[in-house]
Image (cartoon, rainbow, N blue to C red; front, side, top):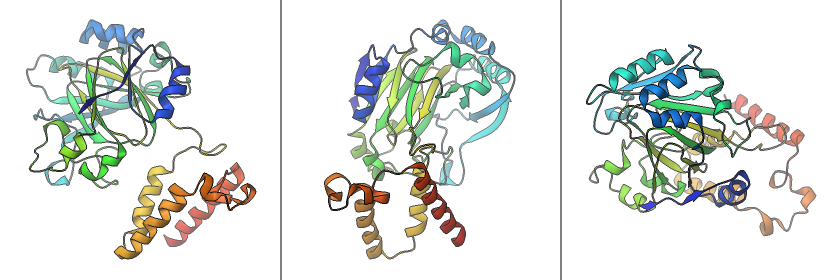
Amino acid sequence: MQAMRELAGVTRERFEREVLPAYEPVVMRGLVAGWPLVAQGRAGLEPCLRYLMGFDLGRPVDALLARPDPSRAFGFAPGLDGFNFARDKRPYAALFEQLWRYSHFPEPPSLAAQSALVAEALPGLEQANACPLLDATVAPRIWTGNRATVPAHFDDSHNVACVAAGRRRFTLLPPQCAPRLYLAAPDHAPTPAPMSVVPDLLQADPACFPLLAEALEQALVAELEPGDAIYIPPLWFHQVEALAPHLNVLMNYWWRPEAAPGRRDDLHLAALRLAMLALRHLPDAEREGWRALFDHYVFGARDAALAHIPEGQRHLFGELDAERDAALRKDIAARLGAGG
């Protein structure tokens, strides 16, 4: 495993010019060091929780609770027939009180409220602690809990994650490592994101997961302190460990650009699942034929490969206006409905 690339003093202009086009993860040290939330996170558990309570309206949030096993992972149960944690909804006041009580246990259960929309759960916190790299329209989410691990998974959005309290270790691997990460089915995971069945990549039994060693040769690892941030490109696998025993707080920002005028860029995972559903019953030779056509139509046909088609006649190969984009989506939806 290798250390991740690090930058300091990253401005929005440098982020957009240098970081985003590279399609590689980057640690940005001290990016949000001036946040009031970071100051309270450095002060300790009680000051940080008191600060957060100042924004709480008492709305319930999703909470996860898991036994204190060695991996402390919110993942799959043995046999993959379920998950190894309980889920419920509780207000932040109850969650924070339980975190405070657990701070007195030598080996407490893992407790976390993950991916809560800040504007709904703690309104005003996002304005007092703004990300300098993104527009205010990119809505942050907050992750709060004690020591726990989220196993390796990928998202189809850009992600800037900012550590506000505690410490977090990120282990990232490129999408090409997918065949060696022992992924569960994309429609069966503890979260909406497709996930590995391995609770902890760094502690896995090589006899059970022999392909992991090859994947980990491409892994990038970084440990973040309060005030640090990380950029995770879309589709990069990431395992995230909250390391501080009593309190870890992170705010993250997911976003994608528009795919076409007025249309969100949100079809990726749906397209993946649809392709799996459409091609699964075919014999191997025909599936290989579809692989070749996907390589051409989806990934290969661009620039010089399209020189034989006038630009104004490229249709789905070329740029789409909002009207044509909507018509294509309507046609696909009709075909799915007819086959339903």
